[in-house]
Length: 309
Image (cartoon, rainbow, N blue to C red; front, top):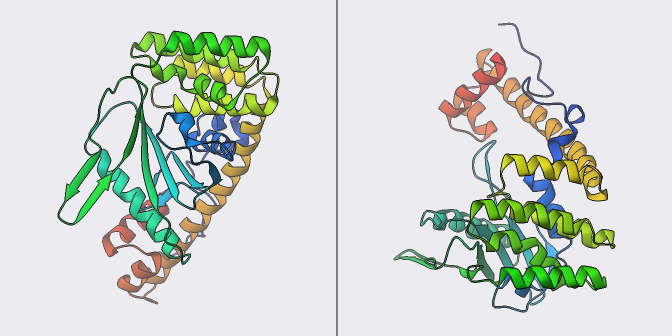
């Protein structure tokens, strides 16, 4: 059999330099920008019943099986040494507890591998669409408890007037910034949500401090990701393209696109090499699959897909 050279990237992979908008479509990049600027700020800004401040952020991706992963919205290290997993939801599903369980167990394992055993908070911020939600899932083998905050009942008009007044006086606190970020989520009406997203983006553009502007814009994109319409997303892309944060997103998108492309290329190259060794009779299928960290059937299916691509 003629051996196929390991590929450096999938044929279907896009060149990150060919599409500057790639960064706007990557929620992970925007979330990181927002999370980085949460350092030193209190989680009470989200309406959560704690005054603990964020001291550091941690990676939010959770590898599940080869080439797949689950991703938390935010993972913060707090000033008392505990860990806060923060997710935001626009609908309640009991199956979310399965997702939270993955989050919790992965974080526990991650810190055990570092020789640490911090306390862990599972926190969920619900949009105005949700008035109440189940906070405990209990089985004989486990108990998952979340700390919930609800935006339903928020005095949206009052928030908006206070935001405008703060901008006019150029006295913009962390509280004002967070209200600007969360304001679109305080409405139930879909049309009102979209209009408020646009309004908040335009208000954020008026913030004189560029660090605060970056925090606000990144936060708005992060927290409206699950409700934003495609037309509104495009509008924000156009607005952001003219801002400092827009250039930051483009630059980071390109860097991370290159990094992911190299990572994918190495992984596909390893699978291809193992598949060639198996086909040449140099190693058994069991050994090839074990080295790839996959089951025999998954290894064969994946290798054949890569070779055909």
